[in-house]
Amino acid sequence: MNFKGWREFTMIMSSTEFFRNLPPKECAKCGERIEEMADCYSHHCENCEGEIR
Image (cartoon, rainbow, N blue to C red):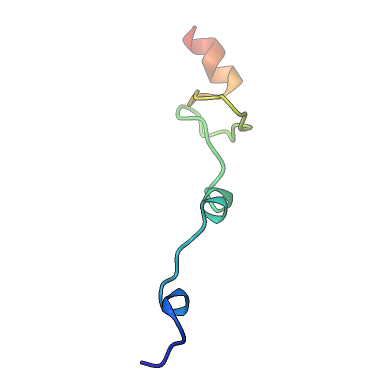
């Protein structure tokens, strides 16, 4: 094997690339796409969240 260094041999994905490649967040109940916010840990859209409460 002919390579110039460990960086060519080892492919490590950056954390930025990992999060950029995640699929959009979806509501656990209806499957509607949820707009992501900084401190949002909800798994339901606004419509389904209203039905739950």
